Each structure stands twice: as structure tokens, then as C-alpha cells.
Length: 475
Image (cartoon, rainbow, N blue to C red):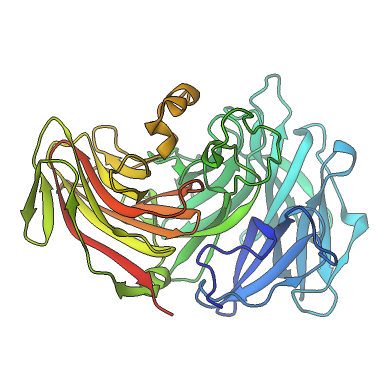
């Protein structure tokens, strides 16, 4: 059986991933969310699998750690794991120690459980610990999702505690407290690339998604980068891991299958309009660092290499305005939309198109569209607004126009290239998809209602389409 590109176990959703790079392998711990009906014998809690290439995943092993997101560290001659629990509406950090030196058998250290101090931090938010050792101070640092004790509502922060023995913790002032989130800054992760230190966290208030801030090594204050959010609404709870030469960001794209939060609209039956669940498929981005220290997201190399079976392109003009330019096409009309229909899409594929903007307001591709290109899933660049946009078929209908009370469904910021060329890569598998632009921006999305259809090109204004390809996955 061919392994999925976007990982999820049968009958379950992939929740928060706790990735670690240990002895040349990625150890991927994650919170497993079973779908209803939960099968007999299902084991709840953390599960672990390992991978060398982030394509082939090893067998899942339940490690019987209960509760939410955490971290692990090898210290004092043994493995220590920290997680969180939620009894009676409260939240506490928990501590486990490996019984046999493996990563699968853990002994709960109940006496080490602790919550917020009520002085620097208030409840109930106190979860998602991340541990690292500071050789300069000879202390272990724990950062975690917390709420500052303050006289206003915007108290979400990344908390900080320190310890010398991993048992007794001293509360310190927050590592990051921007005073702009009503809820805790979830799943915090801290790492360094070159001369920069990065803090990644997720938030479910303000704009729902994964954020990051940066600071130069040795500085005390974090800067907010231009692309403050990584990916968009369809990507959450991301953490990082990697070797000395590469680093990846591991999150999940939620499903729209179970109405977990009870927000589904009763009148509109389209599944694409349903609200997001918790958990779904695992999404992995490769991190890239720009010269100014900002981070970008690119398609991992091993995933691109999986797609080495090009399909022959076919082109059928749906509108006037197209001119052949070498191996590509030019949409030459400056003030109208031009549409081109291509070949049918496979279940899984990698689509590539380089788009050179020559005044177009929008230009991109359409997925799962029909002979008249009436419906489909649109992914396109808007250069004047500096963003990559996802628009579903619902926007093409009167119901969609009435029910979306906002400008776009999904968007991600994109830098303006000096030569005006945008390389758009779209990895799709079933209902899942992730789009990348110029190896520096990513947007994860879902496609439920339209099960099949063709690839298409479109442009509102003048643009040149080059390097157009559809690659199927090799076995």
C-alpha cells in the first residue's frame, strides 16, 4: 500500500506533533484523535513513529502518555518527558521518566506535577511545555502556553520556568508577552538558525494560526517579521525539528468531517463550507531563512522527488486572449479574465506553473474544474496585495456570495519577486492540498465537494504562464 503524503492513521486524526531529531532519525510523537465511532481496542494518548525521510513512516507505537502537547529531553542520564493534563477545568504540567531507556515506556512522576503560581501567571492556561538546556546558566528552561497575571484581557503569553533538576521549577517573567492575544500562545517552540533565534507558537484568538517572532542571538526583545503567520487558517499547532543542515515545521490541516464544535450550518449542505475540526492530516513544510532573518516555507525536497512521472499537457481555450509563447502561454487581454482548460487531475499529484505578471490583478490555477470551468478550487497570486489566495467553488454561487462575510477564504503573504515571476507548486492528495510560492510561502487547504475534474489556468489581466507541468507520484 502506498503511504500517504499527508499522514493520518486509519480511523483517526493527526493532532499536535512533537517532532524530535534523534540519532539521524525523526521521532514523531503526536496526539492521536480517534474518529467516531472509536474502534474497539483503540489506545488513547500519545503515539510515536519514526522516519528517516519524512515520507516513509514507521509503525505507530502507543506510549501511554495521557494529556496534551509536551516535549522530551535526555538529561541526568535518562529520558524525561513533559506533557500536560486538564482535570476539573484546570491545567497542570506533568513529568515522566523512561523506565528502560527507550522512548516508549514512561513512568509518571506524580509528585512533580505543577500549575501556574497565581503571581506571575494565572489559570487556567498552563500547558504545552517545551524544554531546553542552557549551558551558560546550567539550567533547564521550560517555555509553555500561559496567561500572564495582569489587569486586562490580552494576557496570552509564552511563559518561562527554570530548573536545575527537572523536578523543582522557578517561575520567571514571560519569554514573550505581546498583549494582543486573549488566549494562551499554544505549542511554543524555540530554535536557532545561524545568528537568529526564533519563537514559534499558535493562537486561536485574533487570527487563528501559527505565528513566529525572531531576534538576533544575544538580544532580549523579539521582532515581529513581515510574514508574522506561517501558512494560514488550515495549519495549526506547528513545532520544528531538524539536523544541522535542514529544519522542518510539523503541523496539521484540520478536517471538516465531524462537527466537533457544533458550528456546521444547517441550511447549506456543502462540506467545503463546514467549520474546521480539531486535528486532521499531518503537514510538513521545510523552513528556509531569508537574508533579513525572516523565515519562509518550501516544499520538502524528498516530497518533490516523489513526483517524477510527467503527464502530457493538453490545452483547450475556454476564452479568447491566449497566445502561445514557446512552451507556455500568454494571457494577453489586459482587462478581462482568461481561462484555459487542461487535462484531468489524478488523485495525487504535483502541479507546477511559473507565472510572470505583466499587469494581471490575479493569476493562478484551478483544481477539479469542469468543461466550462464554472466551478473549481482557485489558487492564485494577487501581486498588488502581496498574497497567495485560495477560493473555493462556493464563491462562484449566489449562496456562497451570501454566506461568506469576509474578503477571502484563505490567504498567505507573498514577497514581491524582482523579476515578477511567481513559481507556484501545488501538492494535492484526496481532499488535502498545500500550495507554495517561490519556495517561501505556503498555504494548506481542503477540497471536499468536488471529487474529480481537470486542471485549469486563469488570469485576470495580462500574465505569462511558463514551466507548466503535472507530475504523478512514482511507485
